Length: 157
Image (tube, rainbow, N blue to C red):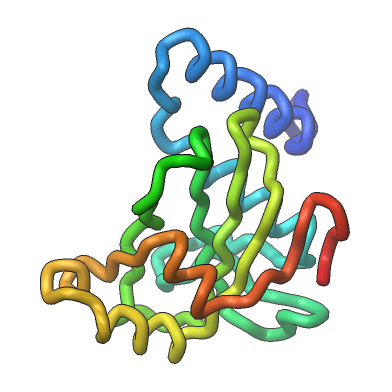
């Protein structure tokens, strides 16, 4: 049994990551995706998988019932910068959709988008050869092929 509740640990991680970036000018590696996975699970009624080796991070309930979901994160520190990318998508693995959690400079989520596997694969196939090999996609492209499923102001849509 742990001493700290997970939600308290995530809140403290959020605070430390934001302070680290303000102090050093660099993001704390690996933190944003851990925070995003917990936020997506809590806010979208997803169950995180203990074994992530299957190629997906969570299984859905409710509107995401039975879906095998990859959760990606992007922290937006400067709205004026374009060309921000999401992490590599492994199209050879079994998954149904991807949730992209967009967070502000305090690592608080402000929007979440979902894109279906077929739409993502079509978008990647239309990309340049080097991006296609890496399974790379920009945040802007993801927003085009996906749909907004949660906002800070309105909650789940």
